[in-house]
Amino acid sequence: MAGNKPQQDGASAPFFASAAGWPDDLVPVGRILDAWGIKGGLKVQAYSADADALFSAKRWYLKSTGPKPGQQQLAVRSVREQGEGIVATAEGVDDRNAAEALRGHEIYIPRSDFPRTPDGEYYWVDLIGLDVVNRESQALGRVIGLIDTGPHAVLRILPPGVEEPAKPDQERLIPFVGAFIDDVNLEAKRITVDWGLDF
Image (cartoon, rainbow, N blue to C red; front, side, top):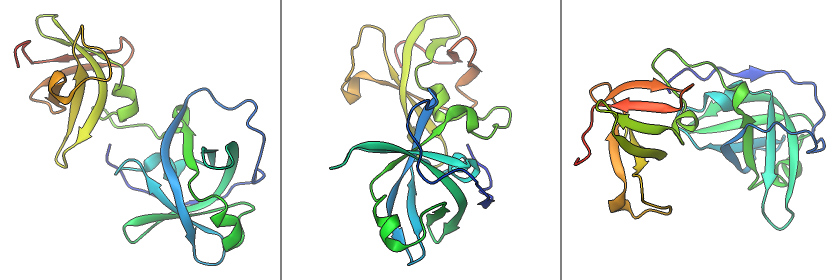
C-alpha cells in the first residue's frame, strides 16, 4: 500500500507496561536497529516499504527473543523519516543507553490500529491465508506470502495437496495486478483470479 508518512506526535502512556492483556491481532511491522543520537532516538527498520502503520500508531508492542526475552509496550512520541531510514522517540527513552537497551526488539502493532486503505489497496497481512480460485471456480491454493518486485507485488500461492514448507518450484506465482486479479473478498477470505490451473 502506498501513502504519505506523516510525523506523529504525542503519547501519554508509561514507557513500559505489563504484557498482560495484549491485543490478539498484533502484526510484526519492524524492528529497532540501534540508538540514534544521544537523546534517546531509535533507529528503526520497517518490514514494508510503506510503513504507514509505524507512523500512525501511538503505541508499539515490543518483543525480544535475545538473551533477555520479554514483552514491553512503548509509548511513541514521534516518528519521522531520516535519510533512507526511520527515527523514533518514545516516553522514558531519554538517552543513548536507554535506546541501546532496545536494540533488536521486534515492533508489533495491532491490525485494528492500521490506517484505512483506499479502495483496491490491501495490506499484505490481510491477503496471506486467503484462498485463491479462478473464474472457473477451480482452487489454485492459498496465499502464503508476497514478493515485492518494485512495480507490483506477486502472490505466492501454495497449491492444494502441497505441504509447507514448499519448494519454490511448487508454488504458484500470480502478479497482484488488475489484469489477473478479478476480486479480493476479505470477508469470504477469497481472491478470484484470471489464471489457469496449468500456468
